[in-house]
Amino acid sequence: MPDAPSDLPEAAQRRFSQGAFSSELSVSDFAACLDMGLEPVGLVQGFCAMRWGAFTMNGMGRGLNPYSSNQGGYVQNYQCPHGMISSEHRSWGQNYQQTWVEDAWRTGFNNAYSRMMEEAQTLGAHGVVGVIDSESPLSDTGVVEFHLRGTAVKVIDMPAPTATPWSTFLAGQRLAKVFEAGYAPVSIVTSVASIRVWAYCMTEYLMDGTGGMWANAGGSAEITQVVDAQTTVRDLTRSRVRSSLHGDALHGAHLEVSMREFSKGDMELQSRLSGNRVRRFKDFDPLALPKPTVRLS
Amino acid sequence: MSDISSTPRPSLKDEVRRAFTTTGAPGANSSAVTSDLSIDEELNLHSIGWEPVELVSGVSFHSIPYGYWNWGQGEIEGASSAHATAFTNATTRLLREAGAAGGHGVVGVHIERAVHPRHIEISLVGTAVRPVDTTKRLERSVFASDLSARDFTMLMIAGWEPLGLATGASFVFAPRRSMSTAIQQQSQNVELTNFTEAMYTAREAAMQRMQEAAIAMHGTGVVDVKVQEGPMSFATHAVAFVAMGTVVRLATSTHQLIHPTMVVSMNDPSVDFDAQTLA
Image 1 (cartoon, chains in turn red, green):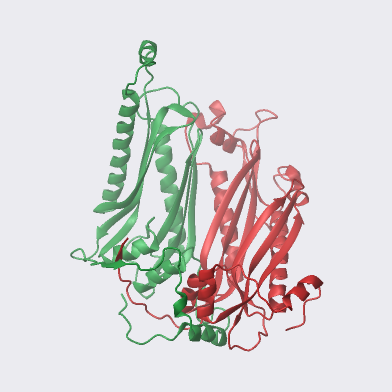
Image 2 (image 1 turned 90 degrees about the horizontal axis):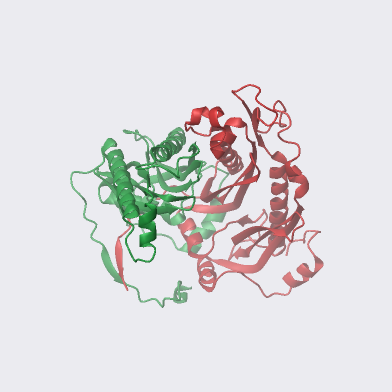
């Protein structure tokens, strides 16, 4: 067994050295792994609890200055076309990338991931299959818990690993098909982007249908500030994931976008993209045309 | 399309060992691809000589001015046209991204739509695809389809091709009953013809619009049509009808018969994997 990483709990080291394995694989996935020559060696996990409130700034620090920069992050300003109306009139708006939220998320996820992979290395595993990741709030304290877990496996009849283990969200038959298709798993990939939308008057009017004569004489129009934010938050996530692929492919991607409104005209968009980074190990092999079947049951 | 290979395939264990002994540098043997297709769907695509290229999306938010929902008669044209514009804008952005990535089309488009009192949201996400033989030139505009990669494969095998997404939406007022009619009908089991007629009006307008969109794309039909209809919580006297699907046309001279094989599964329903095959 390779030397255990220093921060692995002593109890975990003792448990891993006892010989019996644990696994979260279903019986069918377990059997499929054995069929592929993958031997489960242990259920590995990583945790990280991140204090979250300080990173969101709770509404402070944005919407204060339309001419502020964003330390290299995306920022886009919107100017009121009406002139000075009243002190309550939103004379400017801003879309603002919340790099501090993204950094906090990345730190929490990466810490949990690297701790899971440390456990896999301790077990002498070649890879981790069936990875499941979750993030959930711990009570009502502004703390988010990142939790990753998966089943560490060894490739039977292969020499002990010298590199970092590979990882994949897949297990069982779906993983078998990846190998048969000529791809080897490299790692799971996940990225998050966060944009705050501080609405200007036109966005407010168009979203709420208010504003009377100021809202484009009652006509309807596309809400460009929100469209810009929605488009950019997706672009940021995808470009970040692409830059981490280094020419490999991302399979089974899942793109999730959420929008929440903190107060009137103050919205946050969050986009998350995750998937399996895979690398082709043999040339494209033309497959037979699928044979259509009708199942009688 | 590829021929059935007669070469015996190596065992799965051998393939797995080969994967980890011959894997080269990142990207040495593959291009940077992002895709939300499952491995089954990708294999389906490969079987007809297509491959995924890029995960693409298109979004539009369109406003609906105040006061459109509660009083009036006939179609709520502002809401119907806002829906149509939002869908067109989102589709245009999706296709622009697909074209920029070198895709010939987008399959498995997930359509998320929400109608709020003051605005409409349309969000489209799918995977841009192209023939594996990248020397094939794109002979027509990029298509979008909400068919899964499996259904796209079956469609192509049958000699048909997708042309694009078609949608039709209509929002119609259900006229309010007179006070005397409402009181008279309060204790009766009676059809509310104002709502029934509004549904028919909305249905005809929406289906007509979807059909016109299909004809504009030179399609011969629309498959996998999804219909969403009914009242909206924020507008008690308005009904909505939305229809959308993939426009198709015959790409070969005749329809290719599929001839499916009938199979009877002898597996126990609770067992997904046959442990007897283990070495």
